[in-house]
Image (tube, rainbow, N blue to C red):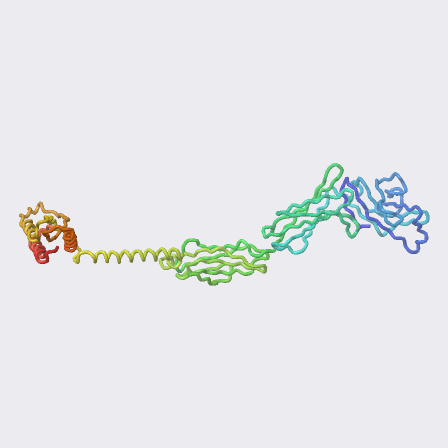
Length: 449
């Protein structure tokens, strides 16, 4: 029988028991005859005080029953309504017509408790991220007629299977196996197995809590720059890489992105940088352990000053800046062409010339111009700048107005009519009349203004 049994106060207890007869007494032990079992408390000596149960009697101090087959040398016994006074050691004795004996060397200790023992949680194998995990929870069942019920508390969905099993010492226990898929989020999370024992009309509970340890590659890897403000050339900045992993990270690596190229710059968790103009750009880090690696998001190291800022500008700002330069160059070229296409001296001159009548010849028009020029000048206080717009038409009259002649005249008018704008400014200079004379001289000479 087992050396010790833990029993709940108010419950029952089953004592697994089996015996053998020494060879020298096999002839005297007649299994076909009535064989009785006797339980002795505290001492192996048979007295009226220590015999607590005899299967040959109907009334005993302890309420119980030998459930085993004595003829098959099975002496398993159940005692009911256990109380705290049952805590003691017990010996078993065989009594028959021809043979009676007690094993003085073998006994069982019964320990009666008010609360049940904690269940035991066992992890089957290594828990690794993304793989199925099995956990066992076992609780003793000292009273197999009323075994405990096991429940689980886990941070994820799971399936479980319960069964009553026999232990190597022939005691009983309830085993519950739970299965789930491990995640790195389960690491350092608690799992709980609770055993609920029925005792009479009420229940007694006990639970065991353990912490999960899940193996996983680096997660939640992040990079940071301190100070976060744009750095000045010659100052120091600290780049820090953090990550969560189990087992812990064994290697941190820093990379820099500049001009579309990625370069490894350091191999440590904390990277201190003495800033130069060329250090601006994006940085990220990688954390690695035996199960894999994790990569952080990029962080920007900005440098004060135009050189650093231009180097750190994203490609979109280079495109916008280049486009603005091209537009400005186009405007400069266009303005130069427009000014070149105007008058050589850059001024627009307009003469308010009288409109010629259809029968007037060019000489008659010139006479009007001369008359206009000879008007007396206005007093200086009335002088002001005037801008006049006019059109000059030159045509040769034809005696016949046939359709052909009209077309020719229209073509001649088109070929010989020119439009000009002359800006006349009266200035308080002595050569005002001379400028006007030069203009009329030009008209008289060419016939075209």
